[in-house]
Image (cartoon, rainbow, N blue to C red; front, side, top):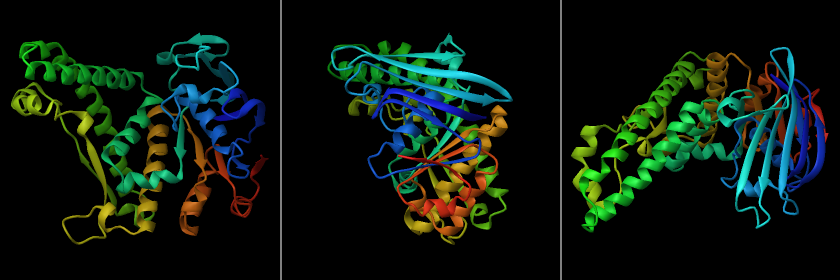
Length: 354
């Protein structure tokens, strides 16, 4: 799969702009603040229907306007299609944003739209997946599926809604304003959706570890993911109820999942790269993670994802740069950079200067 042409209308800093893209490597070169990442973000919006930079869709609309449109002509399995996402805001500062999805001019729901144009984003902040907060790692694993699997998106939304209501009920029960039996409906929603979410997450983690262990790069081969799921069942809810009631929040469930990047290089029981890994080892781990995500998409969905690499050369040493540039042989790749030296790293690249 690859994008032939990208059109942006009132998206971020772009009022009206078109880009022609190569099926292989593309480099968007420009100074900081020139709008390079905005282009990458627009492509991701077409892929997932959301931004990887902001949870607020209103920020994607040019401040002088009340709507934004991102459209692409794509080649998918030797067939050319037009895909489009339209964001429509209200005149009161875009507080309420609606999204409309189209494939070849036909309106689609997000459920039927997702999965048409998969993409994988690399960016410098990826390294914070190693030593950053558990919520950052959960956000990553959610992002893996939110661009492709409506069932996961729906389960995650229902889980978060049920969690919010159950936690509010815990406060009311503690204040004697509600009965413990009133949590039953929300408990059942949590249990059902937690199971769905963990099925997807466990399958993905299993794929990561198989990918690492079979990789020809000996350093990647020594990496593994230590997954620490927090399963939620009727038994765990009952066992934890008194503590949940005291603290006002639900202790078990997928919202407490975490994982670490471990390395066989360490002889101690604690092999977590967050504590013992060098900056170089941590960079390689997150690069390997994205490589495994690409492989997962290709195997599971039988389509080559589009690769979006936002200013990552600044974080990679020459060996890891080689791993990345080799990807250009197999996928459409969109790089961004403010450094002219990137041209020497990517000979023959389709250059887009901003």
